Length: 428
Image (cartoon, rainbow, N blue to C red; front, side, top):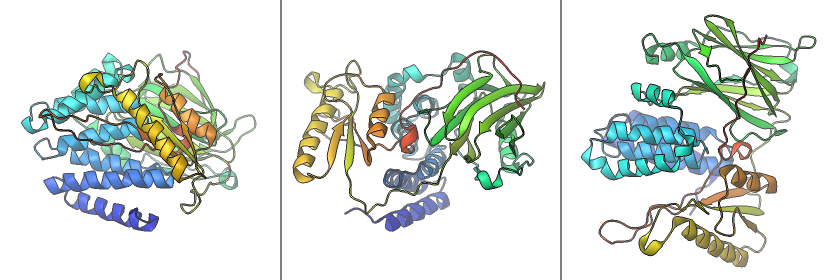
């Protein structure tokens, strides 16, 4: 029986609290994985990405010690969460890649490491550059601690700047984790799942190494719009980072990048007067993330409201066969068959619910297209149908998982890296 929303939140918070208290022990690993599972359910029900961020931090902490039972599985859970819940294939590849380095010599983790290798091969198209992989391999930090900074100012507060010194937590963390003599570089400005004109947007600034930053807001000033200004000391940008990235979503018009002096990199987001922003950073690789939205605040969907539209997403398809099975079985075909059967059952048992499939034949559908189908249709729920490995070495049969998929808020489901353009400029 499904837990009521309040009971689910209580159970998730209590399990997460116990996991933190038991950190560094086998019980802590077990509780962290359980808490992460509850967080994923919360994220799916509440259409809120924040429980996923908490789950990522718990799993990162649980996977630090290779000698603890279940630590490798926690790391693999984290990689899967990047791919399935966040649609962030690049981070999923990095997390899977690091598993082999950390757990490759642990006998008890052989099966887990093999799964990680398969995942990395699956997401090879999202692999970072060789230079970035070298930097990732040189660092053993897999911390995913996020420090959030709310910039909830809207039209009523747009006339006051909120400048302040570098957040001491960020400064201390960056100083402790930056490599000796390593100058941080901005290597990308991404907007995963960006939909022009949408009320929400996520902007990700990718760096080669940790760096602190200062944050300030400037009001509209003549032809200059309201601006969110981020200054990164001792940092620079690689030549491929565009001077201007047009966004047009979440109240963010564009992102501008420039070197204000040889030791300070500035990133400016041009905002409309109703935009609200929240900042946090993630490690491995180091990223500064800005979530932006504009317009009236949207309440979560009432859990008591009737379900009207459900989108089922059969995984893989076309030349993406998924995991192989006995007798030439392919995961892509099993997923499609299962989705078609579920659709027929739901049509009979829930006649008031409309069910759509992201694919109805054996064809490849990109993650962007899958997300767009759900978002364009205004789906109340989006469920990934992706049966994983179903056979063990002894000939027994077991279904490892058929997991639901939550896209970090409907507006940025899927995985899409922003196109990078050349050129430089001087934002102010």
